[in-house]
Image 1 (cartoon, helix red, strand yellow):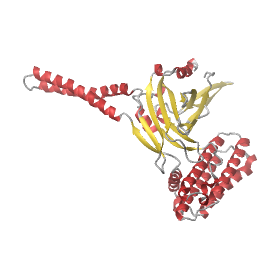
Image 2 (tube, rainbow, N blue to C red; image 1 turned 135 degrees about the vertical axis):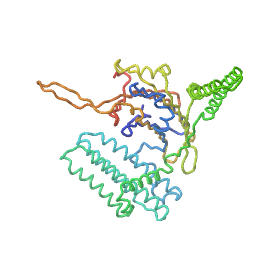
Image 3 (cartoon, one colour; image 1 turned 30 degrees about the vertical axis):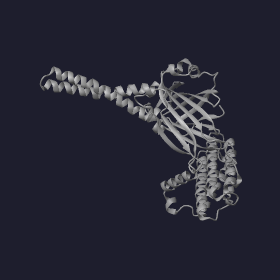
Image 4 (cartoon, helix red, strand yellow; image 1 turned 180 degrees about the horizontal axis):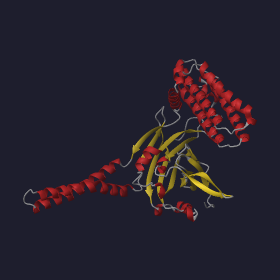
Length: 457
């Protein structure tokens, strides 16, 4: 599945990313198999609650040439382009540097051998240094444009330093690569000194970690202007929900009034028995009204889309794409045959009783062309898995063993497994499926493994 990837994002979150062409249309289905021991279900975690708090969708321009980074060299030269385009061009250039840096740092951190780690880190540092020099080659004389440049330059310099300090702090320990480590440290110092020379940040801001971090988050949002699309969120079926609630209330009230009139007929005077009877009737109405409404509503909305996100360009407000989203708990019989087949390939001991959660996204691109140099946009969907593990047991266990009449013990952590089947349907209705096995504990994701179709696990 070259066009779509499922990867780890943060400690307890995953990211699904795929690219879209102009006038493209794609469908994405994710089927989560959540073991019953996790305690996840419609009563403990509603679809609406999980969507609003743990699922995030994001769309932006994309180029696979991450290290160019990208399109036109005149992006950061006002003299070779229109003044009105300077900010957008600068943001495109800066955003691409950040994406490239984040991608490469994450890949390098996966290298556990010093002989692989340090050469890769040096190569990234040299590439980023060249890109920063290209950015700083031209400083616009116009004060308004200069402010855009300084914001982007300040953020990128700080982000580069932070990324490489993080990389060095997690580097494999080895005395054979002291010169490489010193080179990376010198690169970080040079960026810090560069910001000081240009007086990008006040001493008061630098002295407070919270202030400098929040400032950089603001600058990050500024460089995303015009690159990351604005979102207009719509809750579908809200009118239908009102109709259902109104109809159920009307039917229950009709039934209640019939009981009240019948009670009044049987009791010619107002007595304690009549008052008690009316109290019981109205109490039963309050008890069952919400339950009946919820049951009927779940049946009516089954299979219907629940939310829609419209993405538009933040500068000219042009509508770029739209995304329609479904999310619901399903039963085994509701699984498509190819998805059920992948789940059934697990070994017998791994076929635990599980709750199935289905996420579906239909994305349609409304424009016929993108900005010059861009042939695709990238859709990212982030899933936070924290709500899935909140009922899991804490702590570690102990493994005991006997070695020559001596009992030894080792600490072992509790691990859990979520199976996910991803199904992707393109514009030509061609489908591709892939199963993933996500191993995690209460703190972080241990491993994400793509299971081949001919493998059991």
